[in-house]
Image (cartoon, rainbow, N blue to C red; front, side, top):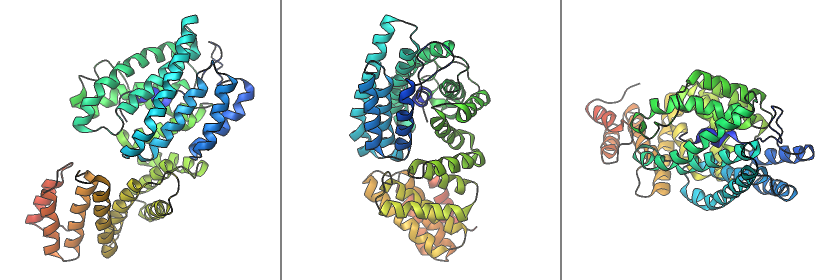
Length: 395
């Protein structure tokens, strides 16, 4: 979650007039759009592409079809945000489609500066461009990429405000407004080093923003799924409200069982609410789906699942299985990351040492803790390893 995310999540609807009664397109397109959404969120990409391409042919001067096509590329990327190969593969098409959205929107705005379709979709395109720029960027890398994203985000914010003024009570637009309200308060708190970059953001309110997102998730005509997905990100990444997140993840998984993002959030919500029985089942299912090469289930998800299965089984006393899963998580990290030492690898090495301590294999545990100190520390793992070198880990 980062700068530009508000608009990135917002634009799934557009009006045909400036009234508060918003519709996406003509009535005869509604079934096509909803069918496209069903295909999209179940990762039936080709089907979604076909349906949304039909929209561009039916209404070539309307930006919605091109935006929805860009959304297909976005959901080709989203299931594995740390997969740089996938990011590079689909980002070119993603940008080309968003450029077309901006081109059509600009043409409409040239004829009518208050054209709400043009305003909304141009803002949406800029928001998604900003989000992609900071995708998977954390720490120092985020500080490097955020200024460019901020330029897009600042322009998008002004456009969104203008669109909101034309239809202030619409539940769909509350998604974008709510995320801006929330992120304006939450981002500077969570990333204090980035406050100079985020200085353009208006004053925000986390609680008001959350309430707006909840309304959008419940009442939005077209953006309700994106609002729920946004809530999952906020509830996990900022609010740590895992009980509420679990309910949303269960609902989304039931409706879109083919979506690995929603299933991953379901697994993590079980884990974070200490429902280790269901969490174990969910993470084991993720590994099976990765091995079966189901769409969207990439090896990056297997690494995460291996780590969490190791942790769950360590917590529940199945130490042999825990050691096996942490070792597999380490090996998977080496294959995925090469010489780069990610937090998944560092923490898996540390956890394996803890398991060995619980098993009474002190020499093996010491070897793991020393290995942690040889790796880059992306967390507080170094301090923990030093502590356990002095005194064995105990539950």
